[in-house]
Length: 236
Image 1: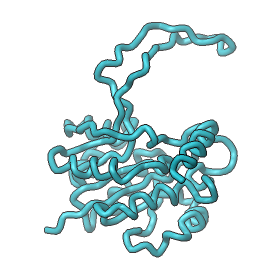
Image 2 (image 1 turned 180 degrees about the horizontal axis):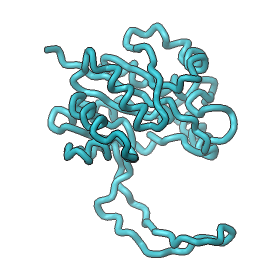
Image 3 (image 1 turned 180 degrees about the vertical axis):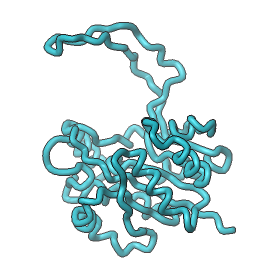
Image 4 (image 1 turned 90 degrees about the vertical axis):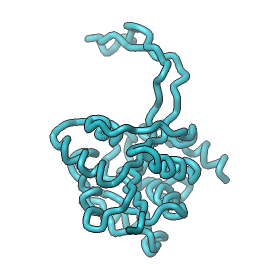
C-alpha cells in the first residue's frame, strides 16, 4: 500500500476578531490573499501529496478569487464545506478523505501564512515514531492568572503566577495518522475542544511536541496584520 500525506487547511471561520474587511483568510498581504500564501507553502512541499481546503459554504467565490493562481495545481483537491465550529469543519474535511485515505494527515490554520517547509517536514517525520505530532514553542514568558472583575472599566488584577516549566504554545500544522484522528473526531462529536491535539489526547493518542517557528504566527486580531507586514519584509 502506497503511503501518502494529505493536508487539510481550515478556512471556514468568519474571523470577527480581525476587524472589518471580510474573513481574514481572504484578505491581502502585499497583494496576495492570506489563504493563497498558506496553501502555496504546502503545495510546494515535496513530502505533501494532496492539499484540501475547508471553506465556509458562502465563500466559494472568495475562494476562487483568492486561489486563482493555484487552482490548477495538481496537488490541490476540490474544497469542501465546513461546519458550525472549527471542530466540525475538521471532521468534515477528514470525512472527505476517507474514501481514499492518506496514511498521514496534517491539519493547519489558514491564518498561519508564514509556515515553512522545515516545520512541515519535522511534523511529518515525527509521525514515523508517534501517532500524533504538533508544531509548538516552549513558553518563556512569565504567566499570570487574572482575577475576574465585575467592573470592566478597571484593569484586571493578578490572582497568581503560573509556573511555566513544561508549558508549550501550540501551533499548526498538527499531524496524525489518518485513521486515528478520523476516529477520534467522531468520538468527540458534541464536545468542545480547542485544537486537534486535544481531540487526540481525549482518546489517549500520544502527541509529540515538535519545534515550531516564531514566525509561524496566527493572524487573529486586527493588530496582527501590522506584525504580518513586518514579517513579509523579512521574507523579501
